[in-house]
Structures are given as structure tokens and as C-alpha cells.
Image (cartoon, rainbow, N blue to C red; front, side, top):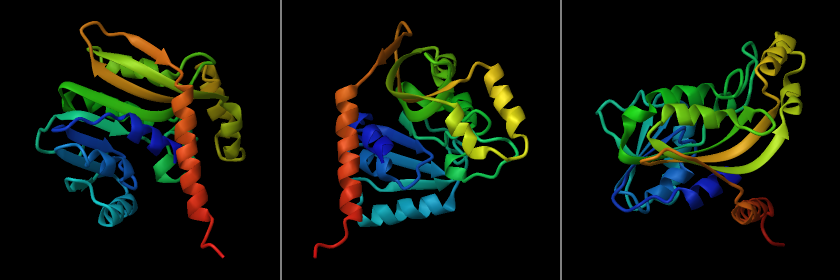
Length: 242
């Protein structure tokens, strides 16, 4: 998917780094990181996701083996390690509290429950000079993604580079839950907080003497990543040649 292609092309893992990927999913990002890093740990709460990651590693392992761990976010990291680079593509779908929704995309009431939880413990797991990189959708106003504010607050000694890809109205995304218990009250709560739009962003937090926020719109890179993802998908679904 586009998210994986973009993260893989822009995570910029360096030789010798100790890398952690939260919400590892199918393991694609970690496998590419394992071609360069000294050590790569992947964490996911879903046994199904970890099974996919192990299967994909069996199909094409990186230069170092993945250390795959079951659990929620930082919970399986018991050894006090700090990481040079932490990657995540978290669940981000806004979901009413009373609704049932797939775990891999359920981001809670405003889509940021998982992000808030990981940001709470993130500083204690980043090594000095460590980088944090996340690709996600975030609610916000027409101009600002709420996740930006959360990252700035969590990482006051880091500069934030925000890559902005797309902005959509929030309302159509919420309408998929019409009819769920508490739907109207949920929409009113989000509106009362000024959350009217969804922003598709990549966040790169890097150590900085003077914390800053830099925003870019990498149109050429986005087009390249979409082209790579589309080519892969069309190849997968084309079937055997006649």
C-alpha cells in the first residue's frame, strides 16, 4: 500500500541502528529496515499480523532476523533498550466508542487513541539522537492536523518535519457508522472540538537544538510512491498470462 511504500522510501535507516517498529503488521517495513540496520524489533498486538510478518520474512528475509514480539506498543520491551529509530503506521480510523471495528484500523473516538498511547511512552524508548517516524491519517481543522500538536508536546527536544499528502472532509468518513448506537452524540463531540477534516501525513521527529516545525508537500515523491503501489497491485491482480 502507499503507506508502506512511502515509509520504506523515506525512513532512511542507517547502518548500525537499533530499530523498533510498532504495529508491525505484515512486516514489510521492518524487512526493508533489516537490510540496513544492526537489529530490528517488531511489535504487534495481533497474532494474525505477527503470523503474516513471519511468513513474509520466510519469503524474503533481511540481512538481520526480525525480533517479533506479541503485545501492545511498548509493553513487550522489557529489557530497557532505547532505539535509534522508531517506526509506526498506527490504526487511525475514527470509531464510535460503542461500535465494533477491525483492530488493525480502530483508532478510537477521534482516530488518535493508539497515537496518544505510544507518544506517552515514546521519549523513554528513544536513544539520544533517536528518530521517530510515523505515517497516519489525523483529524484536525481545515488547516492543521491534530497529530502535529501531539507530537510537538511529546517530543519537546525534537524538530518536527511534517510531510502533508492529502486533506479530506471528516464527515463522509464518519457516515460509515450511521445507525450505530451513540452515532449522533459522537459526531457532535468531534464537531465541538473543531475536528472537521482528515489529514494524511508523515511525521519525522529528529533531535534539534532548537525545536521547529517544518511542513512540506512532497508531490513528486507522493506520485512516485502511488505509481509503485499501483504497479504492484495491478501485477498481483492481473493473474497468469493467457
